[in-house]
Image (tube, rainbow over all chains, first blue to last red):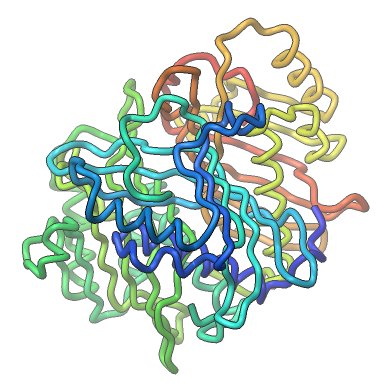
Length: 161
Length: 161
Length: 161
């Protein structure tokens, strides 16, 4: 641990970024989601097994903000699925590295999924490894890797995590 | 995100308020619960569906600290129920607004419920929207709205959330 | 709540300690685990029922860093078990006491366990009560008490929590 890597003010800003990001997904304001990323951002949602072996197969793999917007359009307009709501519980962020442009951060993550007239269930349990940079518009993800421990997902993941 | 809305010292105080509030409920020191609220505080526990449609039906709806104390008395003395313990996991607080008197804060929330000789289960997954003010006695909730995503609750909620 | 007990910089250091500790367990870098403790550290993993009654029976009870290292060796080399991964979600830390040497901190804790080809399940839901001190090597646990609400564990706990 190197607590000189970040000061409390910047850490608070990271915490607010995560909380705001998660809220946009959990309230299903999906159109707001791409704006949390830079233009050239990379987003990967992958099983722990594949991530740890360096295998490329991923449930979602996007290489630009435009691809994120495409996915959001698909999730809202194209994909036919049973309606559900999700709720992120992001754990205490761990600052892994810092430099002049931003921070590398890891978090634990639990995402619950609730369908109408059913008990809630675990959609994803895992962690994230994120690269976050300061931009003129505020903090943004340059990359976000979400790794889920549960190889067996309860069923299709429609919305981003 | 507007990180000028709160400074790290005040944010730390909010974090401690949530942690202390949750601990009072989770250790079932229910008598301490009303003291986290102002005299005229409003507390609502409501399904996401009803909250989003602006419908009034709520599992709990209290309009004063006295009503909170009544509920606590009921939970401890009157209501007949299978004993259980609950455990709050409050997510990273998101500061939505700030003014001279206090803050509007939203959190993700997971509350687990455990009965004797049974595996733990999800009691509530959802979020809170809270108004917190500075008082002579410290930070207090003026209003707390707990919205649960799971329309279907595993069974009766006895203690406040 | 007494928010003068800790300043934002020290609180950030505590948060990073928890996040780093949890990550070492969740990535199963168990050899790193004893280093989060002082030489004479005490670690207890106990049911809520036994903890609240002051009963000694505990799933794990170690009285030195050497005993922690023994356990880690056992978990990696000796104990025969079905492979699983765990993931900690540590709640917002609550600072209970502070003095010149360190802090007493309580947290809510959820630990999920995932086996290959199975849906994730709750391994532990409960809380911790920790004594953390400043050392020449950084913050370290002098004692860590993990109390789980679920008397009924899904099955054996192999790795530390």
